[in-house]
Image (cartoon, rainbow, N blue to C red; front, side, top):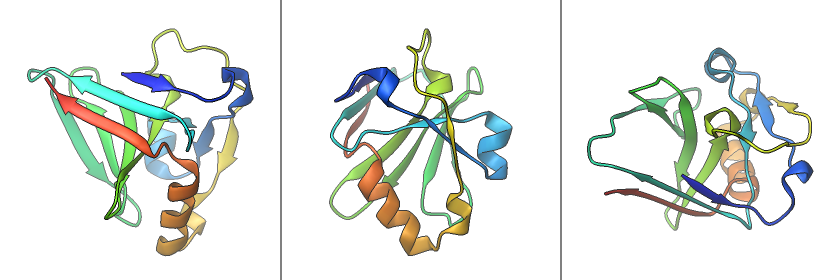
Length: 127
């Protein structure tokens, strides 16, 4: 996994979603709409996909270790993603986490928020 950020890491405050699924996984989401995110997994890597809440985002969980890796949303034009900082080995220092409450947003407002905040240059490949 490779994330390219456009600012120093200490400028990013991961968002801790207060929904049941994210709280259970201890997720804190890192996003950068001008950055890029690349996930390459080998053909033998097994992942599980989950949909929660409004059923618009897909959560990717590693089947080998159970870590919630990322959330993705596919629009007609592109793939957007948010990265769980807990999935980063040796994660650098980020700003303190902020609580986010997307469950209070309408389905349309969630899509608009994701398109504004999430990584918009995303590639996921299976080698």
